[in-house]
Amino acid sequence: MITTHSLPPLDATIKTAVTIGTFDGVHLGHTQIIKQLVQKAKKLEIPSVVLSFYPHPRIVLHQDSGIKLLDSLEEKAAKLEALGVDYFVVYPFSKSFSRMKAETFVSDILVQGLHAKSVLIGYDHRFGRNRNANIEDLRNFGKQYDFEVAEISAQAIEAVAVSSTKIRKALEEGRVKKANQFLGSAFGLCGKVISGKQIGRTLGFPTANITPTYAYKLIPKQGVYVIKSYIDGQEVFGMLNIGQNPTVTLQESESVFPKIEAHFFQFNKDLYGQEIKVSFIDRLRDEIKFDSLEALRSQLKKDQSKALKIVAAYKSQN
Image 1 (tube, rainbow, N blue to C red):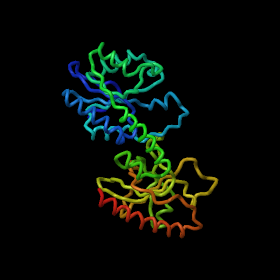
Image 2: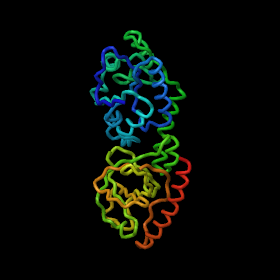
Image 3: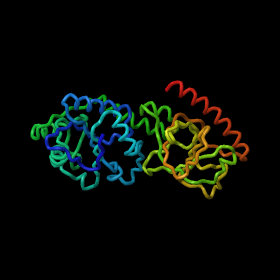
Image 4: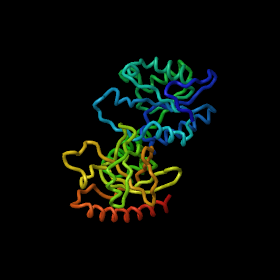
């Protein structure tokens, strides 16, 4: 798959099958639409194109929206490639772009830029300045510019909307297993390992302190989770805490940004400075403030015992 951050330099003779959307999370609802696109492209013997936008339109048009995204562009690209998409076009979204007339969008982007032969969109899709054009307008443009319009069913569109809402709600409530069911894969978080206070090491549970790579990425509810990662090609499991470390952090120094610390089982490599991705498997408990470090150590042992049972069950099912 080819990913571009502008219109790709397609040969004038190449036509494409295109769908349009943000596809945040590329969850099971999206998957049905992408499969429909890929099948259409194969039937017509032309490349498939997913046209998306960055930054997310809501971030540009409603700067106080506070929206947090389920996927980074890299994560989204990997999922689309796995589904068989040929081109992932990430078009720069701006306020000036949002004011583009509908016909200009069709002629300049879909026709001249992407050489669209088939456009797959939802029955409720709206585009152009003030979102004043709909699927019927697109069909009329299709007659004018010689491309067909395939409609995504109302049921599929509803599935996408419901899934996106439920995934965000589940993650915000810490129900990562439920979120993973809707996603069709484990929710992941990427970040760089930075140095910490190394208190975990003194407790027998050394941790990797992770700073998320993307500020716009949604972070699950604070608490303790079972996680999986691939480090230097090795599959490793562990547990991860999202929160303020109340047992070892002074109240006045607490941050509005949660700390993210991962302890990997049977793993002792130095990860400082590395970029890693952790995938959430299950939730163990809320973050708790203990009366002493010894009480914290005792709880961590209980957490590890429970986590290892969850890992064993996970391995047997995957």
